[in-house]
Structure formats: C-alpha cells, structure tokens
Image (cartoon, rainbow, N blue to C red):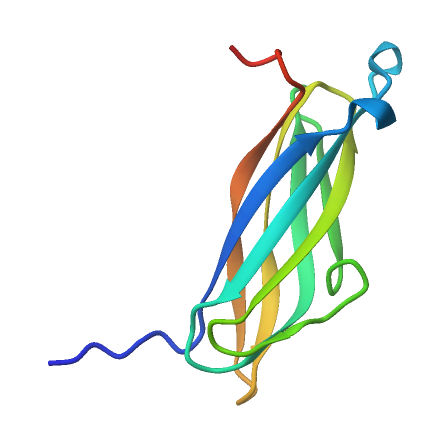
Length: 128
C-alpha cells in the first residue's frame, strides 16, 4: 500500500547569528539575526499569510510578535519550493529562545499552521 504524501506540510530551519555591532552589553541590549528557510514539503501550493512568534529572554520575559507575512512578503510556495529570509530581534539578556508558527493557506483554501521549532539565541561564549 502506498502512503499518500502530506498535502499541507512545510519544514522550517533556522540559523542564528549574534550581532555584536548592534548590541550594547552595558545597556543589556543583545541583538540577533535569524536566517529562516521554509520549504513546502506538502503536495499543494501554499501561501504564508502571517506569523506568530514567542520570544523569551533569560529572565523569563516573553514578548509575542504577530503580523502579516514575513519581512513584508507573503510568499506563495509551490511543492518543494523554498523561501529564505533574514530578520532580527533584540533581547535584554545574552541568552533567549524563540518559537512560533506560520499561518498558511493552501491553493484549495485549506488553512494550516506550520510549527517553527524553538531555537536558542545566545551571545558567543555565554553557553558552555
């Protein structure tokens, strides 16, 4: 029996970079860039409509970020197509975490969420 591929599925990978030149440790300002790759691993085209991030710093402070699209775009991804973008955030601690979801709409009108797995934001030489 052949298993049917998932129709509504995307995968997300993340790389994080500490931005020393935009950070001010004396002022508890720690800037990070994150590079996102989102790939439509499903079998139908789907458009990224909005995003929902939960950003937590080392002190347990949480901020939620919701908005349309990513970096001003609402990319439509054909099956196996990948979209990449870079964005950033500022924490008031040298270590934090981000996780979230993308809200997608498939060509047939089906809405689905894509989980963005939690990833660590860390100033170099802070985690041992």
